[in-house]
Length: 215
Image (cartoon, rainbow, N blue to C red):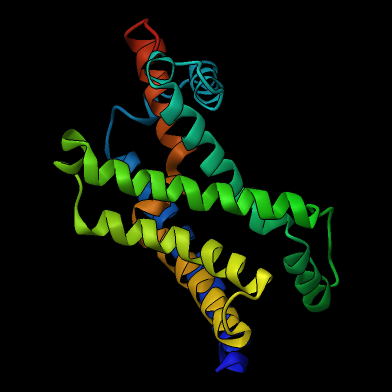
């Protein structure tokens, strides 16, 4: 089982992730071309202004109104993206397979960032269960996506500390990471692909058309 999930299934997951992402981006481009009010109204100035503004913590009114949510959301996304990219063990795998490498996080820093992802995911789960206004717009797929995002970090944390049978948890860690990669283009996790484009359009519409700010 380990040989399969760490070999052929890795290739399959990357092929599906890259192919699916390209398909979704091309599809979005074709759909946008059909709409006569999207590309003609795109503005580099207002698009970049909006993107930069929304990636700065507490820059928008809503962020300032919900400081705890803002801190946890930014910490979650930063750690979710950077931890697997700069993790030492992942870097070693890239070096062995492709002869490429880059700077890595210390093991202690990576451990802390992993815990941040786990705690943030628990916070999001409790929030969906407790707050009626959030629970009302929550669907089973939302819980599934949260589990997909959490699983690689939880299993990686358990495998690193060897608190459970190492080989089993390692297989689950690799498998959950592959499931997440495959899910990105075909679920709402695809917002990682669309963020720049949707935010640029919103900024262009508000700035160039409505002459107002989108925050």
